[in-house]
Length: 269
Image (cartoon, rainbow, N blue to C red):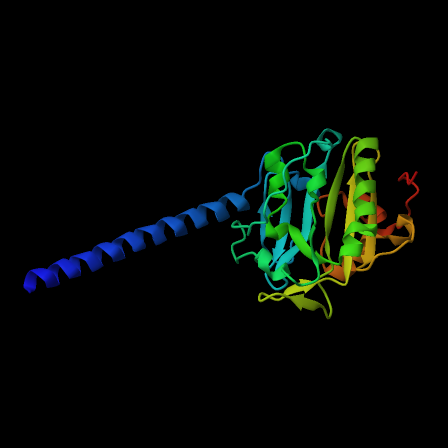
């Protein structure tokens, strides 16, 4: 009887040790992923990165982002789109995965299931076809925001196509994009993912010898209007979001360019 007791106790101790060790390894792996996500990569162009209102910036190989735990999505995603990135390679579409580099915990893709909204990429997969790894990295849940299908496949897609046109024409642009996470918003899923009422995209080109900017602010609905009808000043988007988009620029250049809503330096043909 005593032998059976001690064998049972030993078995319980072994089980606890095994589970405890697995838990320790999982936590150690999680900490390492978060640590790596906080580090800039060799592909990170920090000079053009905006400020973060959430103090949670994550650097992936193909883009950086500032994650808002309150709204369970990025307040901005930023990346450089070079002419060399624009390939027609078709990679198999992967499943969406939770971004483990988000220390507060990124929202699950399940929040979008049966919500009526697309999992709208902020850094489009089409901008990251130059390797399979770069393409698949855009399917992390930190890089998506709820978007109406007609908007996602319509006017927003048209803007993404125009950005690629400019990346080819000007040999690269720096892109910052996100939803305006302010005001009263609908939420979806068990984690209350906010549905932005507006989306923005800010571009800067510093490759042609003359620094220029352009910013777009779009209501979250499809439209037949021309893209230039949505051009606003960067200052307007900063007032809406509380984000400082180009803090590293010389103040004289920054103030002048961010106050302008002119699109004369950008070809819409």
